Length: 282
Image 1 (cartoon, rainbow, N blue to C red):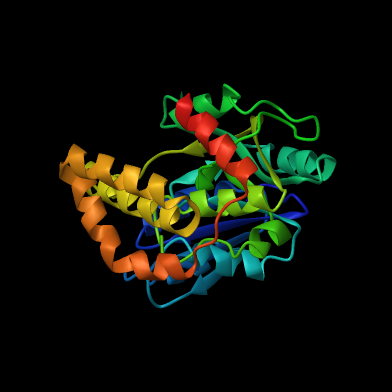
Image 2: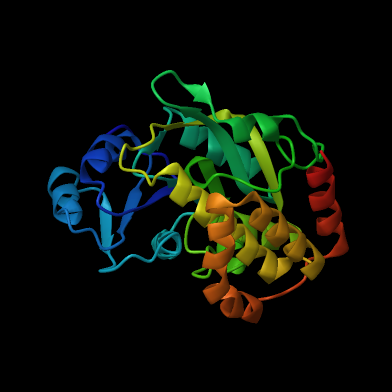
């Protein structure tokens, strides 16, 4: 493994991706915690045998994105970098992230530049963040953002845990949205930093596009139930229903979880709603 960077831990949550993990885990230049979501392919044993420096936590069942919370709580560093089993941080990226976080104490989430595939295409969401529709506050190292992609994000551990981390209502994917909203409402900053780079080579075992769209629609609605005005939730639900297909299936899939989302409901400050409206208008 490469030399380790102090003050930051890499947390990876995975299920049944043994081959991908054995390729990606050795690339991280920091202590690494693998949280195994109930794999049945021998992942935990294989990683322990091949990479004894990696701390492996076996959960026994699939906890979804909240599995990362367990890794964050076990970390003893001020910063945590998330990665997926099919992603890794570029050489020098984690050390650079520590320097940026140290220099910007209000920064809770550093959203890095994600390069996709062997051809290193820029992740489209990164291009949107770099466009800086919310501007760049003087106390942040890059454009302010209201979102991030977990496999390319570094978080301030205490700030992340202070808002509860990822939650089981959303499960996966889209788990970043509620964390983003709560951090922003609490006064923390999130910024896109182009110089901190992660690589993502999507696994061929990923869910199909239709299933993924269904889950994205479901989870966006559930996050809305937790934090957005009911008028916005209704507008989103109607729009998804009219779109049909996987979007409509996502509305149906959200229904059994609505009660749990409402129990966690807490309205956002007006200033955060104004930022959301600005992004939606753009």
